Length: 516
Image 1 (cartoon, rainbow, N blue to C red):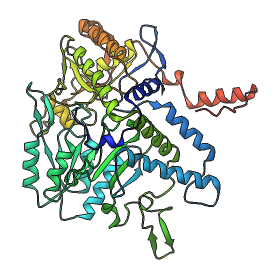
Image 2 (image 1 turned 135 degrees about the vertical axis):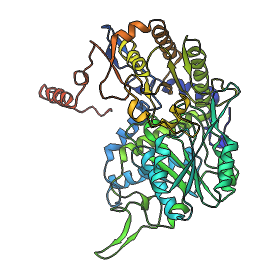
Image 3 (image 1 turned 135 degrees about the horizontal axis):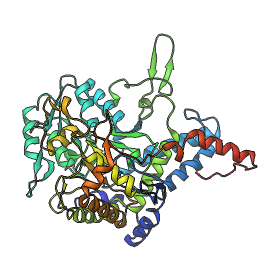
Image 4 (image 1 turned 120 degrees about the vertical axis):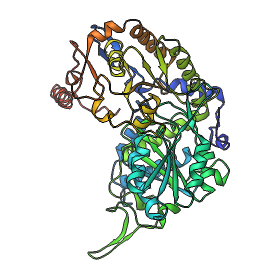
């Protein structure tokens, strides 16, 4: 497995055995692992969560750290009372945890923005476009999430999409490096940056981001890495020990790193921001204001974080990253690699199930993201049936990567362009898409076995399941059970929870529990 050459220096000083024991102790400490729902056949079943590529479950120990910190809660931007001092220090500590996680030195800053990488990528696209307006070309790939494509189109100019290569089995692999080099050479004079995903959210395939950085830097371009999918699963260092291979920008999504409710993170070279005014202005980033002028603070990250920060989310994210470091990302990557291989092996044996992307980890590195289709059933019906009859949570459709998905399905051309007819004729029955299983620290071989058993039943009895479902009018590929209905408010609602709280207080409960 490919790892950063500098990773060893960042690994915790615990023995492998102790780190493995820590992993085993912590992998069951996620909120929602034991949630149960009533299924279509009347059974009460524990949810099996296989949708981590969309969002991870909350790591309870990290949430506990944030909850403890809130006993000192106050806004930042003050040093005159104890709470403000403590929270300011904790906020700075959360930033440092991000930098340490990516082994970033004092040449880099960590900026919290939004609730995922979308805000971060829009921010850096605007910054780099304004920094070098004469360089109006961005190179990206066909495999990108829309968040690592559309901001560059909107804010920079022309976006060139490089295709993926075919592996020896004819399956989609990483970005085609030869074609990428051709594109970089062709647009060298106008190329602002290369925007590349560290791992596809469709196939899980991993790209060689440091090699790509070296190619971009050779022509004076930057490299922006979308690590939203990979950060929780693979080690990544901004600088592998080779200045030409160092990454200029890395973006992370806290809700995909076991910390829902936490901010998105933009880690970048400080020089990219210090030469221009912040994209967003307001309170907390100024040293002087009158009615005719204002002065922006000179230091990062403060000057790029206007307004009141998301302190609980930032602290929880910082705690999560520290936990991951104590376990060791190399260990986590190897643990998940074994589970991914197990899942690929078992899923590949299901009749009439097709997996997209390279299947063999020895020829294409990939994280635990596996997309597939059952040839006899629409992807929306498969997803609904897995939930309704088996309590298995997966995702379907195009995963905010429409050009890539359509290309893998044979609908789009080599450049990722869909036919015009797709806008008019893709009905709920025909809407192109796939089913996606995605893994996290909390998943086990038992979860995979349950999914395989369920999919095997769907493959064996397609007519039965087709009779149970109908397309949802006006949807984009959703199907619903003809008789079974699930009402979210019957399970949980804000009003219901508030009324229960009030009733408990009326009955004499103290409400003194300080645990999250």
